[in-house]
Structures are given as C-alpha cells and as structure tokens.
Amino acid sequence: MINSKIIIKEWTWNADDCNIQQVTSIWTNNAWFVVENLKFVSDPMLFGRHIVELNATNNTLVRSYAWDLDLSGTMDGAGGVGGLAWVTLHTASGAAAGTHFAAYDGNGNVVALVSATTDDVTARYEYGPFGEPIRVSGPAATMNPFRFSTKRTCNTTELVLYEYRAYSPTLGRWLSRDPIGEAGGGNLYGFVENRPSNSSDLLGLSSSTGGANAAEKAWCRANPICCCVARNSGAEVKAEMAKRYLGWQDNTVENAVQHCAWICYVASKALCSKAEAISLGQAHENYPGNPAHDKAMDLYNNSVGADIGGKNLVDCFNRCEVAAKGHRLYWWQVVSPGPPRQGLPSDFPGFTVDGQGRVTGGTVGTGSINPPAPPAP
Image (cartoon, rainbow, N blue to C red; front, side, top):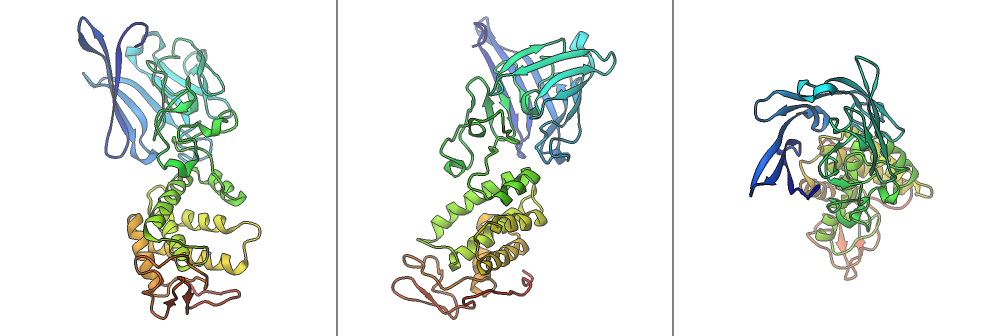
C-alpha cells in the first residue's frame, strides 16, 4: 500500500534470467487497472542489461540507455556498476525529454544527471549508508530508474533490482536468501556484510570473498563476474562432496577429485574463460605455508579439471573420478576417515584400502613432484 493506494508491481523474467517486463497496477473502484506496462529490451552480451524500454501497449519508445566501461575498466567486469553513460528520455517524458549524461560517486552510484542539450543538472541523488534515498530531485530524477549501484530502482517500492536478488535500502537487507545458502556466510539476507560504504555488490551475490587468501581476493577484484561464479561453484562442489564421500582430508584422492571438479565447473561456465579458471586455481594455492609439493599437486589436478571442462557439476565430478581412476590425478597416501563411498578409492586399480579406510599403493610418494603436461581429455 502506497499513499493509501493498493499498488501491485509485477516483473517477468525470461529463461536467461533477464527482466523483460514490468507492470504496475492500482486497485480502484473494486477493480485492478494497469497504469504502466513496460517491455524491456536487453543486451544478451551484457548479462541482460537494459538498453531500451517500450510502452507495451503500442511499442513506442519510453527510455533508452547507452553503456560504457564500468568500475572495472571493462564493459562487464563490475556487472555494469558505474557503467551507464547516458539515458535518453523520449517524448512521453514531457519537459524532461532528451539525453542526460550520468555522474557517479566512487562506489558507482549515480549522483546526478546532466542535460546533453543545455548542460543543466536535471537530477540529483543522495543516499544513506545503506543506499536509502535521501534526495531525489530535478525534472529527470524519478524518470531515470538506474541510481544506487547503477541498478534499476522501482519508484513504487524503492526496491533495487540486482541481477539475482531484490534489495531493500530501507531495510538494509536482501528480500531473499543468498542463492548459495550458508556457504556465503551465516547472514543469508545481509548486504555486503553490513559495510556498504566500503563495499559494493555487483550482481546480488555479495562482495565478500569469505576466507579467501590475499591472492584470491586480488583475483576476485580483477575478475568480479567470474568470482561470483567461482563462489557459487565452490559451494555446490562442497555440497556434492558431502553427498558423494563419507569423509575426506586434504591430499586424499577425494580431495584430488574436488580440485579437478571445481576448476572443471568454473571453466565450463559462460561467464568464465578457461584462462580465468586456471588463474583462479593458481591464486587459490598461492598462500603462505602451502608446501611446494602440495601446491604442485593441486595445480596439476586443477589443470586437468580445466582441460575437462564438463557440462555441469555432476558431469565434472564423474569425469574427474574417471580421471582419478585412470591415474590422471595425483594425491598423497593419507588417511581417509570412514569407509570409501561410490567406489572411491577402493575401486582404483593398484590401490587397496584397509579397515580404517587408509589408502595404500598409488602413483605419488613423498617429496616434490614434477608432473607431465595434462593428457588430452
């Protein structure tokens, strides 16, 4: 209910998770009446970023957008945050019609619009610490939906629509749970760890890199889109590990499969390249105190996963298990607690497991290793 009026907002997404329509209806005279019906045209190469809005009734232009480099210095490295170059308000916008350039603060929040025709400031925006609107003024202010974090803001609800979740600046929290659950932290609804003045969220997946080492955090800053994919993939891999194996430790065969499957899964995603997946694996292993032979072993298993590049998570696990059984992966002779599950590791040729789940035999002993180049998948 807004100003004693009952209003409904309806959004429609397509199969690619792109917002394609927004309908606003109001309850009056015991019936619902549509007061605005917009269709959105998106750029599929920019994660569904809106470039045109049309009146759904007659297909006339309402708004159009031009996008430039975002905070990452690329077209999509920061999810478009700080990347809106200008917005054009078409004839239906009345006195505010025309093209307006966007100005930003350091976090990629739109703070002003400037008319391309008159050089006048046509909109000013100010925000509270959690993005709550303090000032929205000027003839073009409410007609431009891209404001906080350069994400679409709904004038009716003041929700900020990120690519994966809706955020409420008034509440300072997401309206839905973290897509990866508690793997992303204990607070499933928290916004950038309650530190929005020092952090930003690119897609609605949280800016936190959790317990990542310094190299991983630097990698995430350089590859923010793939970082989101990697965080999701890492959580899914952990869940799959729990389903497949009763117990495992570092440097076991199960751990070798985990490394292989994680990088395999990241490399297979459209938003990540094989080179990014490999550099992620290198950053993950680059922490103080990591023994040289363990690091070499894990990097090799990562490289096998990158070469495999499966279609989905289960496919990556199955193919990495086959790679392990074919002695394409490396691991050390350490205790694996509990009985083996799903043929790991008791079904491996040349390996045996005693009653305590200890692996004997294998292809790698102690000391440093110099593995050959990964075989072709």
